[in-house]
Length: 150
Image (cartoon, rainbow, N blue to C red; front, top):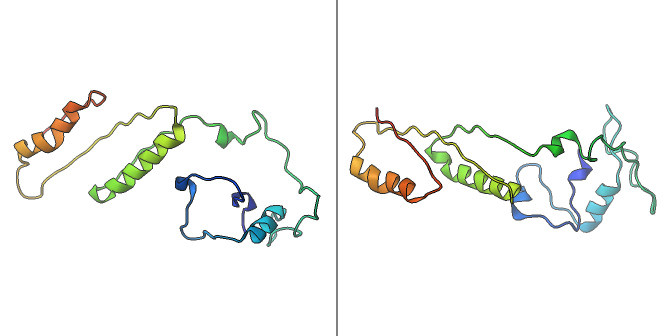
């Protein structure tokens, strides 16, 4: 195991924190306990350190970072994303932004979006545009938008 701190044992997790992608593993409680008791390997060595910590002993911990005790990367309170995507990625973007909204609650999430859409052969039907796009944007008082036709 490359990072025993990623093992979660008897700790509640939100569904969006679980990633069962490549490299993920589900362990028995016994295996997870053994992994969480192992000390990290010294720099430049293979393996997981000297092995399990004897019962009752605590593994050595690195000195606490300055500030509020969390590493600097964990102290950041704001993130900005620049996303480039296509129509095939709308679901992915929706899921990511929903997750981000949940991560910053009760904070705020402001979205600035630039969309370029074009039909390959015909002029865009203005009535369909009104009914399927503009109308929804106009009805939501929290949304501001502008459009430019080329």
